[in-house]
Image 1 (cartoon, rainbow, N blue to C red):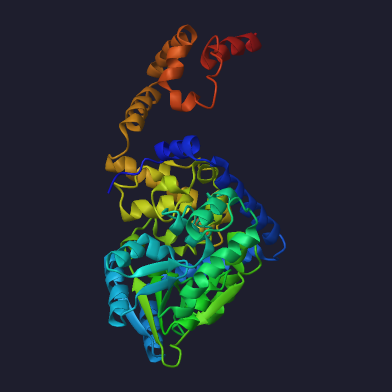
Image 2 (tube, helix red, strand yellow):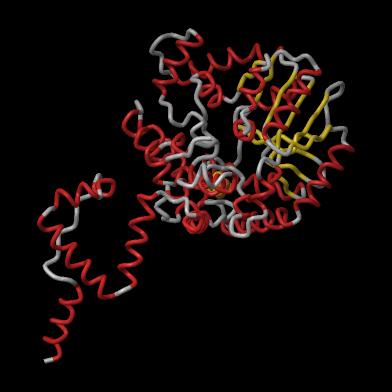
Length: 459
Ligand code: SF4
């Protein structure tokens, strides 16, 4: 896979996107909504701490809880499958659909199936997939990938969607009415729901003590699919586990508020056993999570409940767009989980951050995101895979800074060059000066100024 170059991709997005501000505006709006909602919850910090502790405990005992979950789910009549990687997950899902001769699948939002490229896999084998979450449907019809984990079409404006629906669903040209457009998508999908013989969803939480899966949506599309189709499949990453049903009272209060500034998502559905005459499958997917869990400095990133709050607050994500991360999960959390999956492909992402720490401040499960971003930089430098444009100046800088005499000499040369050839210096650091001006060159170094003034004051 090609190495992701975030800065280049983000520049491309800013310069060539029709609406480079769309993502920024939508994410900022969600961040403000979150703040307004969170301020009204007494003990919010305590809730975050509790969620963090529950997740740390679960991840530390994940083997035990996964086995308990499998046992309970099997007792409930659910068929539980284990997939080591994305390919295995795709094979399992295809196997179930093929066994039932299913011509198509209705799917509600699942970032895990995006991560494992399930749609492509099934479509190549003759099974159509209809994404039924409105945002997912929009990106599917656009032949794009999600730019945000909660709001997949965040980068689109109403004008884009109106044009897309006109081209694909023959809606009235130029009609920008949100209700009209939503109803058109709903009508288009309704027939698919009604005749579906299989439905697939992602999972927000898997409860070990009951073998239940919990799915939070705002559109009810997961419920419509699962309750109508005889075969239901739920694909779940291993880290989605919580020990007890009562733990959901903590996580569901945090999730909606952090994600979209709602006190709770419109539907929180719990599936425990197959419908009469139906089949229920749960696919537990590893795909790099066990390896990640074994990383001493980074395992707590698996606490993530995929609320998207860190994306909404991140100045780099908001400006550079979600697609510039080259991975299903973008933004600050994407930048710390991707190198755990493939350090060579995603070594650039931990550098796509101002390290302002806003991501860690909003994270409902208290992941030290900016701390891990910094730690990944250290690991990447130690691996020797950092870009030469970064590593060479850093090595030179460290040599110069380690000897006062070299530092003084370099400072005097730099002042002279900056004074006489400002254009040359500017072009040498053009990435830095693109949005800033070079600082005014001081007449002398701080050191000589200090010595002079100290002498004056001592007299
Ligand atoms: S890292 Fe935290 S803020 Fe970001 S998506 Fe995960 S839970 Fe939400």
